[in-house]
Length: 196
Image (cartoon, rainbow, N blue to C red; front, side, top):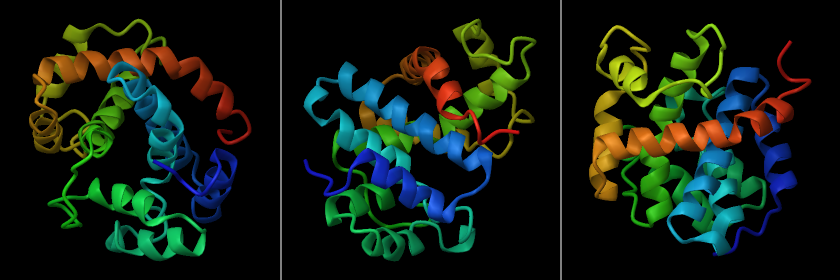
């Protein structure tokens, strides 16, 4: 799988349309989490591709939330991004704002972890450490079950994503938490200068 765009070019393209630190952190988080899953699932040779899709997945969300996964097509085409990446980006809105079904394993991972990483980040911010590193799975499961906590993170999408991947929800929570623990320091370093 080829991207026709380097990681640095993809990041510059993303930042052209996204200025808020929250959106930049979410994009980098998805990049790193998808790369972690690429390694875990035996797609080491496609790590960069998985990462670039993760980085670009919400390119249109900050400026065009009502056209999410639709405006992305134009922005990515203008940026020289190929059809394969565009398809993968748009597939994460399947059944919500897109009719492109996740088919490749990477697309299913993206669909499953997009909302989940948001939930994990929100849970980390509630901790004294503000970190995922000392978060236990049971604590995350409690937050997942609490409807009032991070109500914007759609649990049904996360459950559907686990089903798509043929994973138990528990395993998806465990693996994604592990991925975020592994890349937290790297993400924090990359966010220097964006978060005031």
